[in-house]
Image 1 (tube, rainbow, N blue to C red):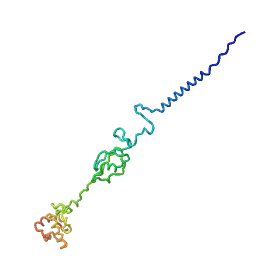
Image 2 (image 1 turned 135 degrees about the vertical axis):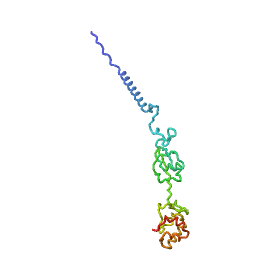
Image 3 (image 1 turned 90 degrees about the vertical axis):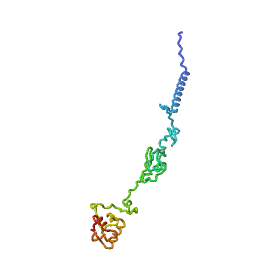
Image 4 (image 1 turned 30 degrees about the horizontal axis):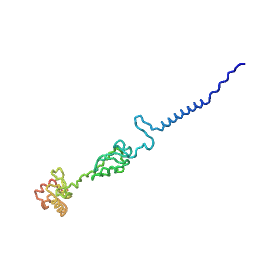
Length: 227
C-alpha cells in the first residue's frame, strides 16, 4: 500500500492581519506628523518668527523700531519760514498744511498765508515753508516832502539850464519850487499874482511879486519861460 504526502496547510490568516495593522499604524504616524508640522509656526531662515493671523499685525499708530512711527501712522515734516516755532514735527497721517502750521505755533505776524495751500495734504519728509509778506516799495508820493509835511520842494531844483525850464504861466506850486530861490511861500505868491493878472507877458513881471527882487530874478531868469 503506497503512502501519499499530505498537503501542507494554508498560511495562517493572522499574520496578514498583523501586517495590515502595522501598515495602517505607520500611515497614521506619518499623516499625524505631517499635519502637526503644517500647523506649527514657520521659522524664517534669518531667525525672525513669522506668525499668521490678525494677532501678528502691530497696533495702528504704535511706534516700531524705537521712536520711528509705524508705516502709515504718522508723518514727519519740517516747518520753516514765517512761523512762531520753526522745526521738525511729527503729525498724524492724513494731516494737512494747516495742521503743520498749528504744530509750529501758528503763523508769524508777517506771514503770507494766502501764498500757501493750507488744505494740501502733507507727506512724510515734506518741508513746508511759509513765505513772508513783501513790504510795499515806498511810492514817490509818500516819499515827497509835501506828503510828509516838509516845506522842502518835492522835486529837484534846477541847477543848469540844460536840465529844463519852468513855464510860469502854467506851472503848479510844486513846479515853481524847482526854480532857484523859490519855496512854498514864494510859489504861492506867484500863483496869486498870476491869478490877478491872468498871465505873465514877460519874465520881468516877476518883480511885481512881493519878495522877488533883481537879485532873485537874475537867479531865476535862466530857468523861466512864459510860453
